[in-house]
Amino acid sequence: MLNISSNLYKSEWTNLVFKNRNQAYGAYLLRAQSSSITWKAFYLTVPVFVLLFAGPMLYRHLHPDDDLKNFATEIPVTVAPPLVDNKIHELKQEPVKPVQQQEKVKTYKLTSRIEVVDKPETDEMPQLKDLENAVAGQVTQTGVSAQAAAIPVSTVSGNGNGDTPAVDNNVYDGAGVERYPEFEGGMGAWTRFLQRNLRYPDQAQERGVQGKVYLSFVVEKDGSISSVTLIKGIGAGCDEEAIRVLKKSPRWKPGQQNQQSVRVRYTMPFSFQLGQ
Figure (tube, one colour):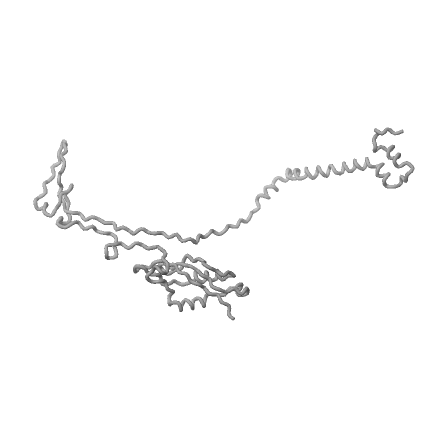
């Protein structure tokens, strides 16, 4: 009689289970050799796990310089272009005030207070002829006659009416100037310039895009173009083409206000039409 508490993996249990059965079948052999198979698997698996965990540490210990080489690799850095603020800040310059120099007036020294000193200084009394056309002052000096008031001498030239013209850097609209900016040669010359330089983008032709691109820009005092801004576009490369041609424009005749060249904002459409 077998003890139930005995080891189930011992041979007596295996013989009891396979008694009067075909013991040449594989199940009997696997059960009889299960203990040895388990130990063999254990002895083969443990070194593999130890090698997986200990191998990298052993390699870093034997080759410490390889880790430093990995940090020496160069990483390309792309620098983004600076953002352009299209807002126009208009600086209003204060009018230049003329610096006036007062002409010296002929004076004679007049003592107006009494001081007690050890050694008084004796000033020569001015002669009677020196007192003519002179005014009283703290020192005696030569100058213009006191019959007429001293005339201030201005070091800044004006416009002839006593006022110094201020530098005007304001940007005017078309309706607020006496003379509007104009392309050299008139609108006919401007049309010929566009015909020579404006190109219909291939992308717009393929997609059948057509219409008008509206641009706003400032004609500076010297006739150059600045502050180009897109007001309304149609896309497909037409907006960029219009801006390119406008920036390529030669100098214009600047606008005039009070007989001075001023900055004027101009709005112009650029037409893109496909031929029928």
